[in-house]
Amino acid sequence: MTVTSTATGVQNAVDQRLFRDVMGHLPTGVVAITGVEVETLRPAGMIVGTFQSLSLSPALVTFSVDRSSSSWPKIRSGGRFSASVLAEHQTDVCKALSRKSGDKFEGVEWVPSPEGCPQFLGASAWIDCEIEQELDGGDHVIVIGRVLRMDGGFTEPLVFHKGKLGGYRLPAAA
Image (cartoon, rainbow, N blue to C red; front, side):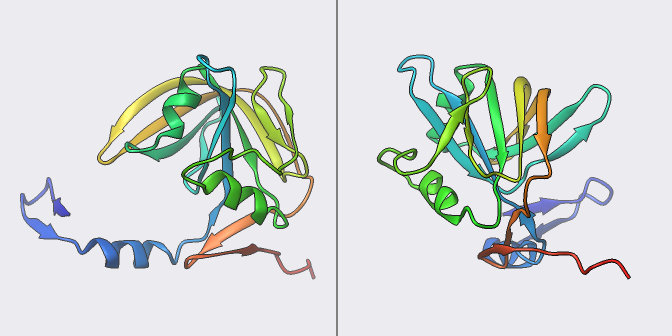
């Protein structure tokens, strides 16, 4: 990977492994992005660690997905998605949706959102969205979603940090 500074025009080669290792110091939430594939009417899903709020007015969220993803085109086909912020006890859901083949929804409990997108029971929060826009993000696509409805605060979230999944708790207030 080469990084070019627009201010100086200088190119710096960045080692991809080092980039991943350094960025691994930033803890991220684990979010299941799900939808229904229009062609088959089957649920489709994937895990992202890049989910975040983008705008309050209008309410927008964003995440990025690798261009080589086979799941995103299936989710995109429906024009809507549900984001389940996984809870610290949901590593099984994370592993199931991270599979490259087979039925990703086998053995995990979910219910359809009002739009029919899968939401995982026991998640820390969920956010239903319609796809607003996709932008170029190098080897990723940046997805912007318009929030339709949401709810949350059910339990502590699942966190990914330095290659490991786990929970996170803030210290009690003094």
